[in-house]
Image (tube, rainbow, N blue to C red):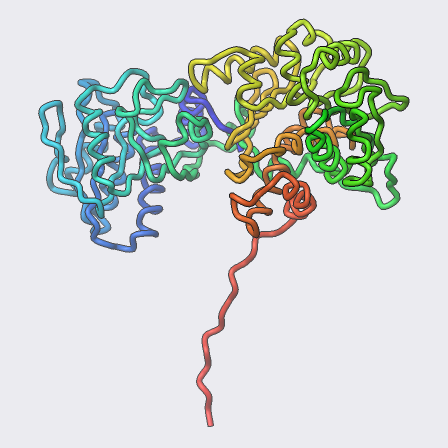
Length: 518
């Protein structure tokens, strides 16, 4: 699913009106009816007080449409105009006139000196104040109104986007923002739903189709794309009946050190479990017996050093190399990595200590192959690109870094984002149970194992992040968040593949009982 920018949304609205021969007011009507239908289906005529707060732009116009239809359907509605400016949009004014004909009275006008309305915690608030067009700080009296919303504890539904949130930067203060229980977004989700600093303003969100022109939706390239099952299915490579292990490549995992052999083991197991034909682990001597015992399916090559990697040598041609997990940053390991990078031409997945070494010696970045995959956790990312002011600044800096070094960067998080040049791929799988040791090592192996099978580095990363999160989602169904460990994710990778082709379960049809006749 594409995530359209603010400018693209405006363009899509205009193009739709032209191609479908409708006015912008009619498109607003269509949007408002969709939200009315959403509420009507759930409320079924319940007389819970509904407070609809409308701005004086197009988001406010949407709110007035919603209010008009709810009033017509017999709901208990109170409509307010949040009069934060002297400028009103044309479509707002059209709908402002229409609602008077429906309700027989004007909505209540609110300004800086207005008393805050009484809102009970069992009431419903519909927030249609600002929408995506906000580009300046919120006035203090409007901030107080939003604080009043939150303090009321009433269920709050935001129209398109929680008011007070920008689409391109993080707000200056939390007080000037509506904290929505639910957001109904028109046609496309917004990037702010997936960033740690802004996603908290909407507990849940849903996209409503308002009939934007299909050609525009399919042909417009967006900066960000939301990755779900439908997006990764086309990436999947089916296996031929007569395939053999040589068809699926040979993954080499380089890592481990004394006391951290588990990282190399997890990464190697993940690479084989995701489908690599062969996996070899290159580890210090102390890891030989561990790897051969715990993971008999792997081949093992050892460094000459007992406890750390000091010289990387192997006598075969791997398809891909995952490097860094549990490797440490000893001086001799840094030298070994530099020598390795100077001669390596194979695709790379770089994680953990290898990333830390690259951060310390940035000149080494010039030695990595094009489209190398980097999988940093937040502190490792900071060491690579420097500090950032907010999530939008972080994305900007990662895109710059990706373009400069021609690399793919995985920004790990609740919605892991894969960045390649100017494009963002926002993942939808995963859960808080993944906040546990070794999960990143598994991801390194998953991505390496997919590249081994012939996936491009970018496809392997997008697909791998999705399957990694889906496996964790499947695993917690039996384990819960707290008990999930990295090995459980590896064990569920197969079910992650199977889930790709699982059809949604249809609700069971229960036949009505028939009367017995004598």
